[in-house]
Each structure stands twice: as structure tokens, then as C-alpha cells.
Length: 138
Image (cartoon, rainbow, N blue to C red; front, side):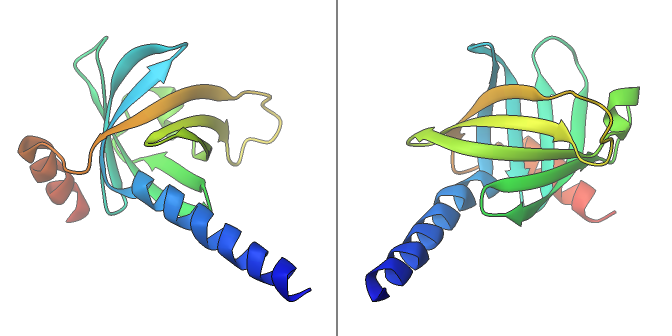
């Protein structure tokens, strides 16, 4: 019994540490195995920059549990930006995660978005750091 409890504690602790690396840094985001943009995260602020347009999506994210986060936009560009999302991450290999995003409060909508992120740097480009800092002072 002692070993079972110890195993559960170690497993939970290890899973938390795995997902903690998602909370800060620069990430590439992929859809259907094609790179579509980058994500910059610091504290609870995230900036998403997609290659197909000039817009930035700024969101606040919070950890719900182990490898599950909630995000919501605070700069609304499109109707979809008004939806709060629940993201679940699964580690594939070192610094690489699959994710599934589902609407958090719209329960009658059967929709999910799947993709992959790869952490490419533990730091963030200075221009994005300034944007993140400016947004966190709102």
C-alpha cells in the first residue's frame, strides 16, 4: 500500500513538472502537422501570432489542474475570440505536446480544436516581452 501511495505522489509530481514548462517561453503551433504560428507566454499572459495574417491574439491563461489550462481573449478581433477555452495537453516527447481545445461554457456545441505545440525557447523575444508586460499592467 505504501508503494502505491508513493507511486501516485511521484506520478502526480512528475506530471505537474512536465506541464510547468508550458507556462513560459516561445512555442511553435502546428495544425495538421503544418506550422501555423507562434505563441509567447509569460506569467498568465499569452500572445498568439499566426503567419496567415497580421493580427495578434492576446489571451489570459490559467492553470485548471495538472496539464489543463483555461484561456480567454482580452482583445476581441472576431466573434470566436469571445469564447473561453479549456485546453488539455499531452506530452509527446521532450518539449512537444498535443493539445485539444474545447469551449468551456458552451456545452451544447460539439466542437474541439486539436493541434501541437513545440517549445522552441525558454525565453521570449524582447519585443514580445514588452507587449506582454504592457498587457499585464491593464
